[in-house]
Image 1 (cartoon, chains in turn brown, red):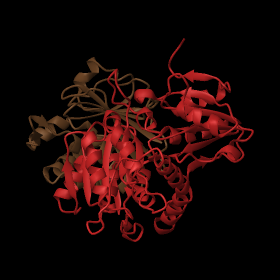
Image 2: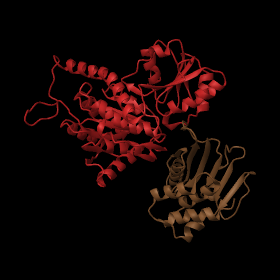
Image 3: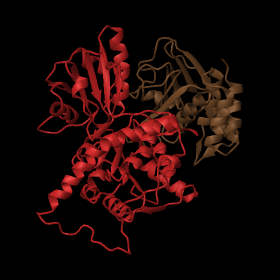
Image 4: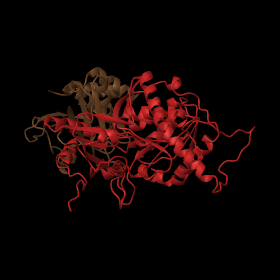
Length: 175
Length: 370
């Protein structure tokens, strides 16, 4: 079982990203679950979502304690939250940033998702949309197929710029 | 048709596919998505039903009672404080023998204010005459909702059914699930005592002490009758749609020396604990109680086994509610673990520890050091 913890802020689309990822993985023929961890969250507060992928039915409902991959949509929360907590040995980090930070020796993928969203004017209520470009980056990392990401995004959003943003992120992410 | 969505969405689509004539509901966290989605389906013309947004849960159930009394298929959904607010009407629905189907998102009761999962809300309605089933996956939430209509509306049952799903853990998790066309599975509703303007009668009239107990006795019979009807409804569902359910879901229980028992999502998580314990050489198994009312006959299954019961609920002054039911219905005195209250995170590793450290007959509150 492959386990992901996604750190974002309320309003950034992290919860939706988790759902679209679960959808795309299921289109790839995998079992998948996506769970938001709810407290008294509101816009701007740190939020966590969990995604699990497996080749067999997933029976686990508890929180992800030892992630294989940590996704950070807002590097600013790293001042408040230990995003590497419980990280598996050999676990990886995907961070929304133009720069590649050093993170305890873990392999880090960095990509400027905010820049991609702004370049396409993909902004809702003042927030750049990060979840659809994130899905493109995750396809590049190899978690899901490009085709399934495309299908899952079009099932969630009618605005075609979302698929463009995903493609852009796929092309920009250096592995 | 394959869908990917939350437990809430699955329940809403099952309600759509069962084609109720009326849905009357009031939104409450974590059930809100159910009523939003049903309103969407009605608005989009996918469900030809009257959607009644009411001002409270008490009114929601009162509206459902009025509708069901006309012989119309009726659905609603609630959670926690909403459920206990409709308590009076829940008893009325069962007493009037109305086959209302309702989803309940299991959530703790305040104070302290908490929106996490707990079974105390539905279990406090244990003696209301409602049938209660507990789901553990998004698919099961969908299927149980469809099956519930067939059971509730059976003329030998005619009692309301509550489908329970763990708040957030199941209402908000996204999983793949298949929706079906149940038109060949659910016959048209035919309520024998429906209001008939050509044959006027009294409803909810004064019932003297020479008659009242007979009506209670009839509810008792309806509940008893429901056991074979549940079994048949689930068999027929398996035949038509390929997914099999029972009064319980057993996992490696047959040759087990120690059995873990729970309801809802913990009842799935514990299967992972069973796998881990088996690797260590501990002969563990699990039994997930699906139907709480009517309560399954587990006496034979549990004979001579060590039992660990995990209760996401508590009866103050008595003990874990599921543990108490088992004490009453079997000869076993289980190790009673109180865990998961208010959404407390309980992992399969925690459950494996409960098994390794079991003390039959004792009670253990997870996470509390005394």
